[in-house]
Length: 75
Image (cartoon, rainbow, N blue to C red; front, side, top):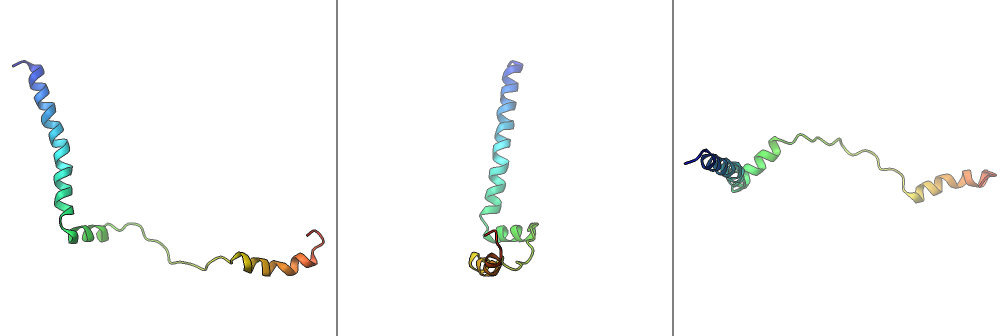
């Protein structure tokens, strides 16, 4: 057997390992829903701050600016 044939078998083996490890790991994690919940709660690295005050609506802004518009000579 030539070295090229051995090299080809090695590449096929490495490619099979490259594809099978993620597939087996995904199957091992995804088939148990409790495991997915545990991992997503454990790796919750995004912490959103509490929601602040909401900005005023357009109607509230128009009401607040109405007296200034009347007194201003530019509008």
